[in-house]
Picture 1: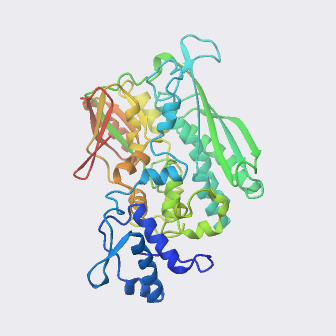
Picture 2: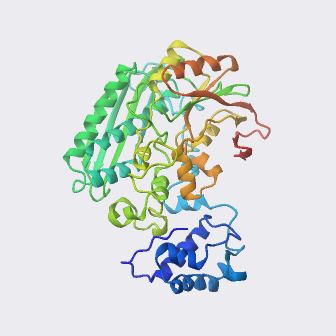
Length: 475
């Protein structure tokens, strides 16, 4: 058990210790009946007076949070300990949602477009008026990953890190479009909202040039995507650092759309790995993508960043939920050759070159495609009708996700709802086509495997079962 003691704090040291123990109990890191380290052990580890630690324990005992046993062994009381950490409460307290249930509720009654079951909303071709074509317009961005880039930039002075943020913003749009079969004639516009006092011209140049560089590389790989310009706004009253977003537009024949109607029982699920290094990536990718970074950065990174960069978090969030992790950006990531910073900042991999080849070389094989972005492995449940997704052969979990889970105490069930956990794109195909899809993916040095299958739902509603080791996680 480690404490973060702030000698500059107005709170007495015994209160800091008590509050941190209480927080670990509330968040499930310390479970019901868990035994606490001895007073002497904690005092020696932190260079504190034994009486200071004892005072902290006595205050918690008085509140009924912990209790003393034989030989002054303290344990968490059953009524205060939990059997599982309330991760959803942590996400909500930070102003984010693990399931995006409120978003889905808000759009329930909105027109679903020409192909209601498709991954993206698809409309009639309002741009040219062609009745045989349709339009897709899609908006997304790099999310709070830009704050991680900001931290790296402020610590090192290296503005080039923002090139990865430009890629994140583009890919979060492009890879959603892939799911409805769009791989060409894509026009993309980017928006950069910055606080000019903290984000200088050097950062803007990296974002703008990074944008063009990513688009050029995608075109070299056979993806027809063009820049439609964008907007750079100085909005210091709206953002203390920087926000990077993009909007993609495409027109496509209706006959080529992957509508989602073919996602049915009997199909195999092929997962495309989010980690490793593909033939079109320059460095190893941790697999993190651009989802769940609000909680990942707070659960992983040290209070050092809370004290030094107050502009990077909402002052209304409880301090105990802000940068409460064990790592700094340059610390090694356990089980990996990457540092924590490199892993968290890994540019989001695009599967566009592979999906373009799949649709061209194996036409009709992909009955459905799902981008495991917002909602993680639970994303698939929004598609298909009365189907049961069974993911019982998942790929090994990359080190970044194991580290996040360990640092945060988040339940594995919740982890699969927030992060991709090792594969960020799913191809639904017949069993006989699995080997073809896997072989094509591996030609791009992207690991692929059948990670599950689809059954008919017994309840009439879409269901998901994930095998985590020997445990069945049901959604």
